[in-house]
Length: 399
Ligand SMILES: *[C@@H]1O[C@H](CO)[C@@H](O)[C@H](O)[C@H]1NC(C)=O
Ligand SMILES: *[C@@H]1O[C@H](CO)[C@@H](O)[C@H](O)[C@H]1NC(C)=O
Ligand SMILES: *[C@@H]1O[C@H](CO)[C@@H](O)[C@H](O)[C@H]1NC(C)=O
Ligand SMILES: [Zn+2]
Image (cartoon, rainbow, N blue to C red):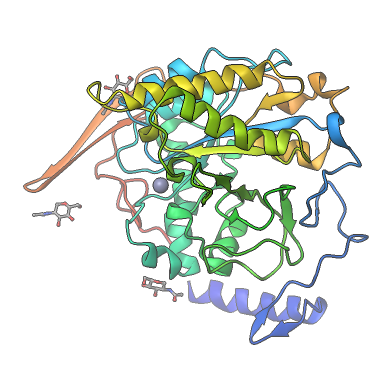
């Protein structure tokens, strides 16, 4: 360890001499304003309300993101099966949702199933501690323990190849500024979708890389202000509820719709702002708990019916594609107009997603006051996996 540290210090010193980095202001390296000539796709894009690739109006495919946060369980998986598994885009490929998965309570054989069916598997922390102050103040090594270690953890127990896990959403959208983005870049992540925008709704703010300072409003401080070259932010463009208040997650929109018609109208009205505008990606960011509930509460079935009606109508509209955020990132790097979109390979079904969880185990952990179940694609680890012990082997992990 000591040897490694000395070597790292020596290397850092060397790098500091070789590269003259960005200007250091108030002891941090603030990203400079975007240089549109230097910042070019596929690796760099300034924050902007203009679609990429000189595409305009009807030549821009309208991307739609369906995202679901938190644990994948036997209670919510049937909903995903009903709503997502049998719907296809106009290119003939299956629609894909994006799942921001937390470790606790997740059933990893079901996570494997979602991955094998083409859905985007992204991360949302191991603990999902329900104190936003915890996330706001987390240092870089703890972001590594919560998210970077989770990548290996999910890959191990759900048999999902590491290369497929590219994106993150911070719990409660509580971004952790530079330490969070630094940990994500160091951990090989490629995008984040945690930052709502109220100020660039119509026209919508397109996804951008963090090579330079962005024009995005910071709704939930602390937002990153250093440069993270090539790392994408997918802004969460706020929706507007029936009471005219903005909402980043649709399950926060008020008044909460109680009927199929109210749910459908909320979604369609907000979708049309983008579809009839600059076609910035439209996100329906929610939790399954908005759409799945007890049978004696009819509003859940009503909302689900409105959600399904919305999906079926947009899938029949010209140039609309429901894709995972990682698929959208590939499109951002290589913007492709509607004329060529049906052969755009990242949006076609992926033949490399081969099922490899044939004998899932149900693992059980308990002590006198506590009990957890975990379904795993590999033999049960001796201890319940947790932060600082992400593989459940209790070997030391250097976060
Ligand atoms: C990061 O936070 C953890 C938990 O509060 C603490 O134990 C650790 O020493 C901190 N690391 C650094 C480098 O400050
Ligand atoms: C039981 O396990 C939980 C989780 O590891 C721990 O927080 C708790 O302190 C344990 N309780 C006892 C009585 O050992
Ligand atoms: C996980 O899901 C599988 C497939 O539905 C099921 O057989 C298994 O019992 C579940 N495990 C737990 C711990 O809920
Ligand atoms: Zn969450």
